[in-house]
Length: 408
Image (cartoon, rainbow, N blue to C red; front, side, top):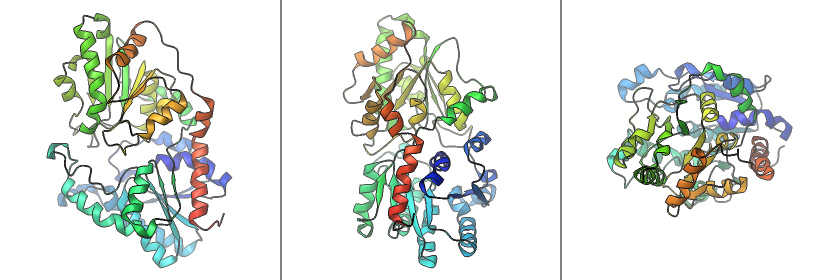
């Protein structure tokens, strides 16, 4: 959704007129953020579809909004294709089961389709992980994804992804698409969002305690993040044990760490903090917050922290709000993650991989926060433009042109 929203202001200038089909927000579990509508051009047509009510389907163990809305998407797309002319269907969502409709409509109407792989769809990543570390309903979702992914992928006309690895994995898995157009396109930095957030900052509660120096991460948690978070907690423990009382004024917030409905999330970061002896300095809020609440909270923080997954293919596709927020930033990722190079292009000074980051590296970050007011980072103008939402939309449109034989 965020990729499309940030691209809508720029599609027309690059030869593509976009219309959007989405599930009516009344059927979604996530917090609704109506401020998102402020950045969408008024002329964009948006069609909303229904979904089966979760209160009914959950009795059968079915909660996925993709599966609950699949039939309604099919009916709306069929209606539009019968009455209007389109060149391309673009699936940009992590609700991947919806993507199988691309193959259906290509066969029936001859229309091309492109899939945006923001995350892996079918993956063996959790196969060797303990049951406690696997997502809910893993047995079912693993088999469902294994069945549905080839339906969508064997006929797709183009692939966009936030990671080179996702594309190479798919092309190796499905030889039929080895030579189709593909492009690695990260999420872009969308400056208007920061203005919207600032204009509405009083609409959201402050989650941070102003009596402390607050370091904030907002995003999912999980055991796969522990290798990147552990060096932070160990360094904090070491300096506290050395009697540095000033560091007791630091508070580390991990917000929105669970995908579960509000009030039902299981902490995945605070147990690690207890294990490593820094629980008093760490606050985990499992409930997810809305997008603009996220931006406001990042702006209210004294500093920012971004941990990555231990999966070398993982790309934190939503790093750009952090880079649009002029606050000291510490990032720790797998050494193979593309995020490290992107941040170095920006000029982020304190970005490390979790295998080589040292206690001294992290302690220096702590000291810069405690000993005075660190200067806001100055990022390289070339990188700011290269990874802007406008440029990312240009890159998408080039892929669309290739996937449709240059119709535009």
